[in-house]
Amino acid sequence: MVKTPAPQLPEDATAWMNSLKPTVRAEIDRLMKETGVVSFAKYWREHRSELEELERSFDTNF
Image (cartoon, rainbow, N blue to C red; front, side, top):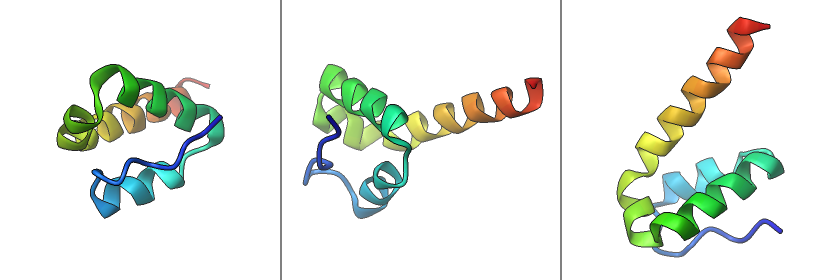
């Protein structure tokens, strides 16, 4: 089940999370639960960058 982004997140983080596919979003929700909302809010750009890099690697390897 995909949750609504935490109100502590910046608007651009919320917009990014809302644009994700449900399976990816579920993993981001798991990561946020694991790291805590405060930490995730502080480092969400790094998480986004890592996810985008992973997506690019799949695009170029197939």
